[in-house]
Image (cartoon, rainbow, N blue to C red; front, side, top):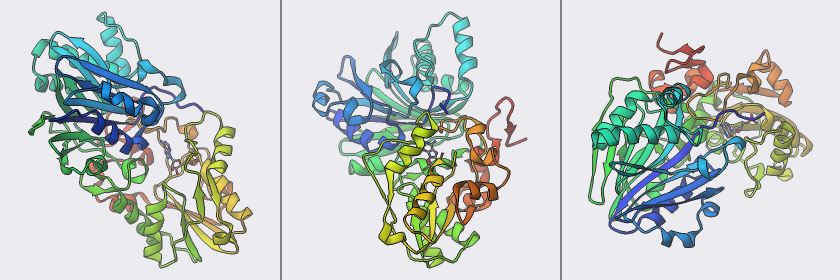
Length: 464
Ligand code: AMP
């Protein structure tokens, strides 16, 4: 099954300092590599113009470390892109750069616009042309329009926010000035940190720590932040919307060592595990994670239940991503190449395996049967996210209802049979909200609640 649509979750960076910033942007991109492996790029401003290096694949393949010397400049932005098969290629890679009559503008985007087609059509009717189908191109052109008119980046971002709907965290650079802004509902993360001799805006806080910097604070929903080598300036632009932080960042997407909107991802996952243990206990000999996505959840489950924690799967760290492979058969064989059970741990044991989420069910079906082949006596499955039932329109790669196992089955019992587990339990919706530590109205959990925090044609609006 091919995921439709060219827009995805990604990672963004912006840095200013009193020295060349490309090496720091490179390191930051490596830290947020999990947010996208399709392409990577860096743009730097050398005092008179912007140069960009970008390419397909992981950061280290897309940008040769030696070529960082070709990117001098004390201001820059970077991007890693989570793509699908249909949207490869240099033209789609970010940062993108255009020339406006206010100066050279580069931009990187994370998220997904929900009014992309409408806006694109509107501008095409006005005679605009596009060379990609990316949100980034649309955003950079609208931002460029307002910069050309207003010559004021803060005003220009307000103009952009008034037009865009959906999720977006953006870093951009105009004539060497670096900014970041976040959509008014704060779907995707963006955080400010201070580093030696400058500042950084980045999708996840771990990158700040990796650069031995200090977290200043999250960019608030609807806020823009300008960074210079000596300081920063926050300006709130839209403050009257409900908050809709993507719950899937804490469940699966973000690094466990990141802190997003004040909540550490590892802690949220451990809480999820302990809520699961409270809600769905079972007698067993050991608790095991599906590495790496279920590790913190499993630790939480083990501590709460008092059942010993063990590593029972070894992950081949060189295996690629299975989730976006287009064919089911490819996904299945890729899962079994990726994860091998440790027979000594599992043989003769009653095992609880904990994972973050079930989407299609491919992963668990194979892993449960591998555990049985390795001699497990019982396999109990516990899942740190309620059944995924609704597509994400805000950037997470879960796009059609028919791909979700929970929608093509009648009951959890049927899913249990398909994956071949002795028991299967998901965390409750209330349990998830409690574990993540926000109010329900501060989160977007549309993928599990089927209620969306923005108006989307044909879908139920959460606030009606
Ligand atoms: P599945 O085999 O389809 O049930 O995949 C579920 C597993 O894939 C989860 O345990 C996650 O670790 C991972 N996953 C969930 N959502 C995504 C996503 N949007 N992109 C990549 N991996 C995902």
